[in-house]
Image 1 (cartoon, helix red, strand yellow):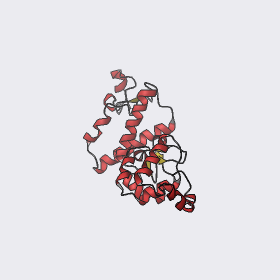
Image 2 (image 1 turned 60 degrees about the vertical axis):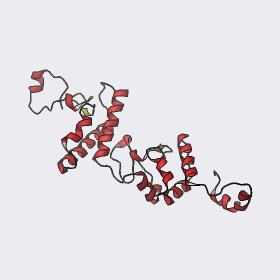
Image 3 (image 1 turned 120 degrees about the vertical axis):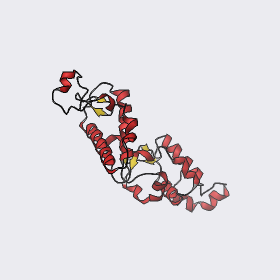
Image 4 (image 1 turned 135 degrees about the vertical axis):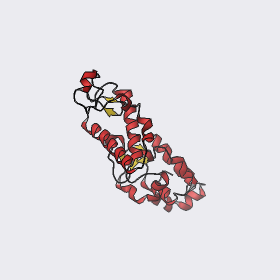
Length: 212
């Protein structure tokens, strides 16, 4: 019901006489949240309170992978693109508001991470490559914040490789995506770049900006 809880409680007997269910099922609460999220309309905090209280309910599974978490700015985001504690990915990911700190069971059920890891870094680079192809093909990345995110992602991937968390084959999906700025600042595929660690060789080979 889109009626304040206090009003529902005060009118419980009357609502029951009318045949109105005053305690909606989890399926109904989930459906309500998804409807409101689809409309980009806010929901009251008690929706998340109930979802958190019943985090083990099978109905919660419908929320997985959907934009169902209300951000401070009023938009909804999927559990895979938000974090609880820190966000090093700028505009490409989001940080949940402090009000979600009390919904730990729900966030755990939905797979929301406290802090990002190397898998998230690879996913962000994939998203950046998709955006590059759609909006900025062959144009240099001029936004300093975006550049910082790109290099932060590569730093996280390098650290994961050094720790042995991944092997070289794990990087395969990135090989042909535009995810590394070349000498001109244009995002290019790693497979098409050379590391210019021998002064003069790049110029001698006449490979232009295809170096880092």
